[in-house]
Image (cartoon, rainbow, N blue to C red):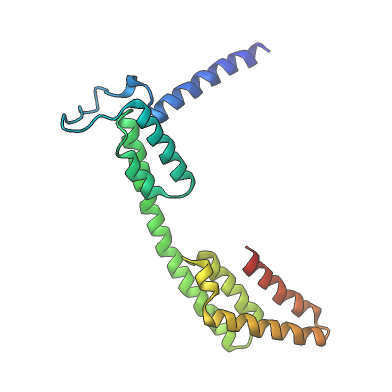
Length: 186
């Protein structure tokens, strides 16, 4: 029990420090020795407004709108080095996201090529697998699934599944409908 009380006190203190360092709502961090003074021409924003800006920027981050959050943190002066660190993290994340988008585009093109190769061989169930992979990395999944060739592939795959059902090839039916379910329900 004694360890639990000491741990709770330590944890509470740690969380309080973390909140102050993260949000910088106190004036204790407004001007530190390693942070240059703000230019006099810059308009000061009240702490209440800064708190609202922090809350709004956190909401934007949670929604994945990192560039908007980065722009918003530029208006926050409380915490000096803290708000600067948050802006740096957001900028770094945006750079990493841009690299990821480039890699996704390369993968997308490769998967679409593989799907077309399988369509040419009439291996529609495998083509659907490549379309599923392409949809996972597509910049706009909805638009990709509405492309003409994808619609034709789906229609041909459904026709092939119906024929497989008539032929009592239940595994073939299962393969096609499983991939279609994954494609349109994910």
